[in-house]
Image (cartoon, rainbow, N blue to C red; front, side, top):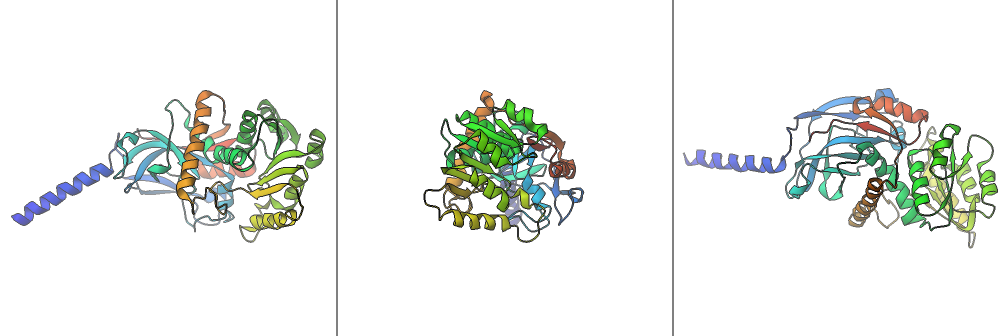
Length: 380
């Protein structure tokens, strides 16, 4: 009898613990969908998988995904070309906006039901995602989830490069390569808000939009970009933001700079179809940086990574507390700019989560302007 009573008490304690872990505003299904890159596949090879809905642990929350982005990173991951990507198979998804539907122990109960956003790196292409509560930024209800999502990878990358890396000041002139892309449209708007003059390269189809954001346009499909930039800025520019990478683009970008200018390389799009190590673009940059360092008083250069890897500054791996503090500050500032109407993220397409493969095909083809966003059905 005593044994039975003890069992009943243990069961009640276990039940209470589970309730504290799984507080939610609407029933959370026991199974849900996620999208998987199973190996080296074409976009149509991305798989839809039914899985057990994850349960948050101590310090974590479960969110119902409302929006998650499609970026060049995922296009590279299809071919195993993104530095640091997980082993196949894995769930991609670099950023997420969603609603908190369950709390792990120790999490502030005021988060329940709130819309939140953060950087994830992987795992966000799913109906439900478990995240660290300390990594979240609360999002106002009136904002569009897809537009907020465009602020995360794209907006944070642009903001950190402008204000924490190149430290752009009013009156300076900057060049944005790929000004019609997801990061490019953010760079143009944020640079203009900072009081900089912007020269943006883009395709003819993107010209009207890029000009409407306040940039002078150079059509990179025609002529020599560095020569056209030099015609617009004869004494050179203060910064170039280069997502193309590779030796040809790096040399061209460096040649556009004033003697004290700053080249920020943040991608290797030109190497997307190449073979060999996924780190080859970074190694090429290091090689050129070493050559340029021999020029006394010449322009500076850096390879920017949104995670801060290798910077020994706000590095997610080595200085996580500083990294997440700065991320919350910067993303919070971007969300405020959106709420005030000072910033307008460009959402190219809204595509259901199940159709992620089609979204990747659109991104790889490159016939879009802004950010492609996958949408989920949030539980609230």
